[in-house]
Length: 434
Ligand SMILES: CC(=O)N[C@H]1[C@@H](OP(=O)(O)OP(=O)(O)OC[C@H]2O[C@@H](n3ccc(=O)[nH]c3=O)[C@H](O)[C@@H]2O)O[C@H](CO)[C@@H](O)[C@@H]1O
Ligand SMILES: C=C(OP(=O)(O)O)C(=O)O
Image (cartoon, rainbow, N blue to C red; front, top):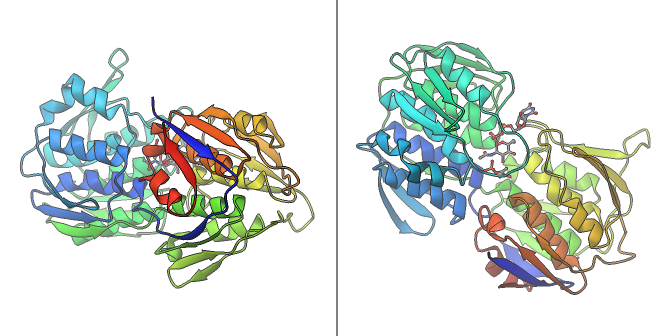
């Protein structure tokens, strides 16, 4: 098992560029299966989840070239669907969530797919009902084997329909959109997820010849076409990495410039950080965060304690709450963090409490943080990373803490953050892989 050893308490300084977005990469990589022509994707992050999905595409028979670390070309001339029934596929796809989105394109192009239980973060129940019920209404037959924990899906006549999703699932929307672009007729998706990465997928599909309107809203209308062509697509900057760097600057009193952060696509994130008292300036496409000794959490207008909660886009992403929570531990004031979507994502606060943070975990979804206002520092400890975002939040806590910390299970961090030790060490951090 890999681990990070961190010497905390150092101020960092410099410029850092967010990687290409992990969760956009997982969507658009699956879309390369929708055409037999060449698709080039740039700004690809070199991280475990993305590399595993690229490997799976290769296993399926897609021709892949990676001329540089962040550029890949794909050509899905022929695809071996039978590979999806192999133990190797089950094992590999069980390591990430993104593989679930292979289903939509494979149904659209080949009329058949197998969908084993996807992996990804173990942060509570993560059902696939939105995906499967959507496919079903489009003419897909499915069976589910409880033993194998696998769906078998077949689509003789994939057709457009009206879908009112029971929740705006991100991967569910992406999956249905990818099935609909090659289905016969019109598919209308109401209550669709509309986050920037779904928008990026839709824009890419339109460049490939699809006809999708309503991009950016929760009502997507897709006119099916008979085939799609190749295209080039560049991933946005990873907004969760951007938020993590702002939190890192705040916690370690560091002056950081976050370069090429696609600042127009951050939604409520800047306002959310400001409510926690963090100062920063948006300069063109960069974010400048000055070194800040203190930051003060605001209250609601009526003076009551601020609550920060997740919500489907354009609300605050649940993936950001862990770093926001860590940042609040050194703020002046109190905040309630309410993680509505996932039921096992806040348990990592135990580690922060052990480090000296003042937090009350009210229940699995809610934690009250009483900021220390730097009157005492967190203390370094040995801990383990339970999931990707808690992992990076603990890394930020450790970098701000007095003394040495060890974070075990650092693979969880490598799933989503490219060369995080190297990039932060270049700013003056001390992180060693052990
Ligand atoms: C690979 C990928 O892109 N993963 C992201 C994707 O996962 P993913 O697409 O798996 O997440 P979903 O959007 O399907 O939903 C996540 C969870 O939130 C619940 N839910 C969802 C919508 C809603 O209105 N109410 C509600 O409670 C769902 O029941 C589910 O338990 O979106 C999540 C929500 O932004 C992010 O945390 C994940 O990082
Ligand atoms: C939950 C996440 O990832 P995944 O959906 O891939 O497990 C995440 O990116 O925070």
